[in-house]
Length: 412
Image (cartoon, rainbow, N blue to C red; front, side, top):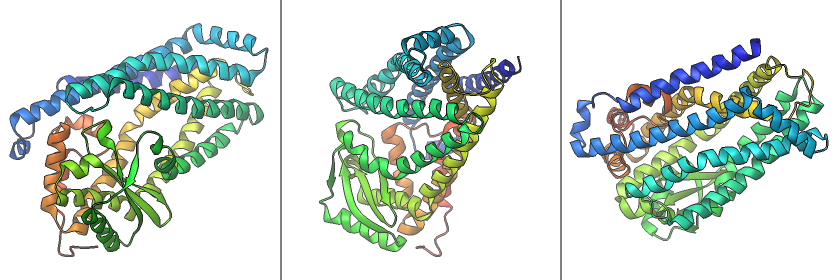
């Protein structure tokens, strides 16, 4: 009974946030007057409509996944599926757990597919952002699915093996494994995995290369390569990012950024991304992620220990994987405000440093306006939604902060 109360309490808290998010999505409230200094009424309305569609799809997808897993967990379906997996595995618990994982993985993929297809393909085409064909979308989808299946499957095998070998301390081993993976993913994923989905070529524009080198010298950073990514094969949206290890780093620029934005705004983007490296945000984000990772595994251990008459010693039965999935679905949703708040502070700090690096706040402001116009940003989102889910400050908040940056010491 105590275990069920814990789980239902977690689901109740999730439901409260879902309803609040839905309320402010449907009734976002008035637009801040300051928005009309930069955007027309039509631009503001289009941004809100596009954001509303994405928010509703996000909520529907999340609710569908949680609903399916909760139905499995709190009904007889998960136990029956677990017993069937044990029979197929001839009593081998880790093999049975993997079979259960495969069934649940396929089920959640099927549940999520319509939302993913609509949001990342049809909706993006409808608003003029997507440039890829349906065949290309499916190719990317299957590559991502295979990668997810391999990595998740390996994680499941390790999870059930550790719960069987170290029934009281498995959460420490699980946390340690995932911490190592977070470090690898943060630093090497853009270098090793990104090329599976995009083509990267050295920048050939001497003006761009010279600008990157100049900013790097001001920031006392070493940039090994300046690469251009063929983002235009999928989208009209623009971005840039840094990747690499130690002091040797590479910057990746979307070809859409170089094609559609003036040079001073490209410089503002590069300076912002460079600021994340200079201020140690990649390292800090990794540390925060590792700490949150250990906290979540410990909390999961406690939930499982007091849940639904589970055995105190491992290995757990295969159907426990449904509980693990439900826990992380709900915990990641409830943890959104904390993660988003940390990210917004880092983004604001990067904006401030970037302005000092370029000594050109006017270009940084124009960049925010152009990005919002081209990407149909909700320039005046409801405060609750910005607090709950925005990883960057909203457009108006960023413009206000940029204008407030002191430039007495124009370059750090």
